Length: 102
Image (cartoon, rainbow, N blue to C red; front, side, top):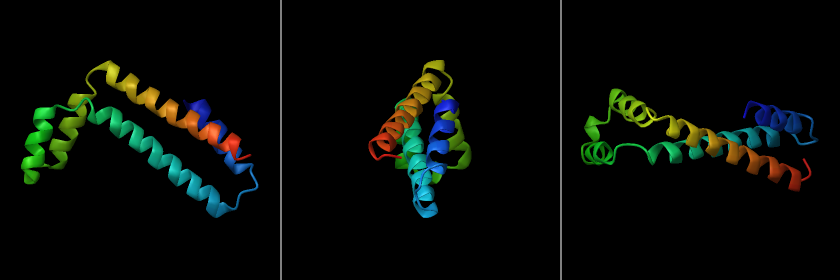
């Protein structure tokens, strides 16, 4: 994954894009990766805990949020799924840059 990120950054930095467009691409990449990780993570969060927190928003503390995440990532498969989601997003971004001529 790190290699893909390095390639993307190099392509963007070496492109003729304006700095504001480069910055926009980095922000979009960040949002896409965060969304992919969240989607993979949320599918493994305890549904009972999630329902309880949704119905009692005052119970949604930082500690509760951390506990949800820690419980979800206990399984190695979850980490692998998040990793693959990030790879998929980065590959899609790489293909989009190629199509855009960047």
